[in-house]
Image 1: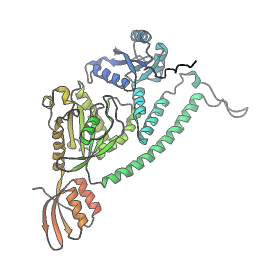
Image 2 (image 1 turned 180 degrees about the vertical axis):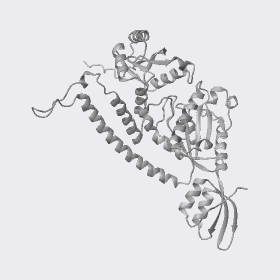
Image 3 (image 1 turned 90 degrees about the horizontal axis):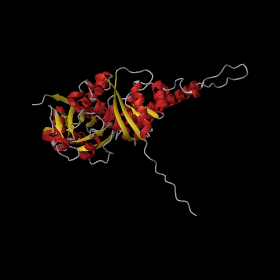
Image 4 (image 1 turned 120 degrees about the vertical axis):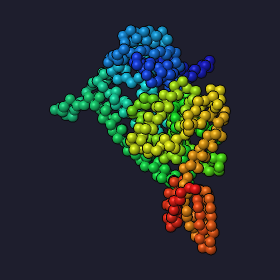
Length: 440
């Protein structure tokens, strides 16, 4: 008698998402309901089945459990009644709080940091992304190595009969983590050096870079796919894209640019993961234009905007981004289709309303990028020998020749170039100086 094949499909883990919020959070900054919705989206994005959500106002943060005694008792009853396997606490828990909550409720407890680390671990695709996430995981685990679990209190024997008591398990675990951390940092430095060489090579490519930035799930990847025809993964979930992706884009004027899609920003990003944004942040720092993509239909859109601007401002303070970045930023108000069309979207000066899903407003965005390119170009005079066909072709391909006077041995050109292209020309043709001229 043949046995029936066993069912291999795994049942989804049931989860509860809890937002412990101090009372001022209900009146200041990000709305508690929007924050809870974001936490639910984070949990659902890694396959958890959400069966219960709640906001617990906190009068004071209890050192042992964060929640009050009555709140914890109520939550424990719900966990047992709903057979919850994981409780996601949208807050940063200390190791002691995490252990006490798990002991009290009898299930796994994950805080905001652990949840985001899990998401990044599942989505990272490039070598640097994988290394950065592993580094963040180990730094997070190291902070959890406290004398709370019995196996960490056992001692390993010393050498010989007169040896000391040896090292405790916690010391051994910490030593192994530290060794791995040192190795990871060395590997990351090598990856960064290699990527730096690639970025240096890209500077020689005569195309400006346009970088998409914005809060996670604002629709950056959908917009990227719509205007480039690329197949970048785009899904209605948080952190669908983690690694920078670049594609060529031709503007209405015929100019070509490189469009870069990046990871989404999020509020209260775990400190362990800030370094994992480095690849994306460097792409933004190199960009000639920054497109700040916003979810115009989101009820918390204004707070999300402030979160993104805060990260970019921190980059400026750290010297990673120049102070003039707001001058080359275009605000893209996405998801206009959810508000009744682009005309229904409230716009500020310098912003463009679009729907990446339907394509409405995209011609206006392309025109805005083109117009910005034109404004940022500068006029130069250059004298090219008639025998130097390479320099002449370069200027026609990468700039705009406004005037040209041909003589027997020399061509006198008035050209319009981007500052970056002017530097590229100077590196490639050092014998042909460009003289700046005020635009007419």
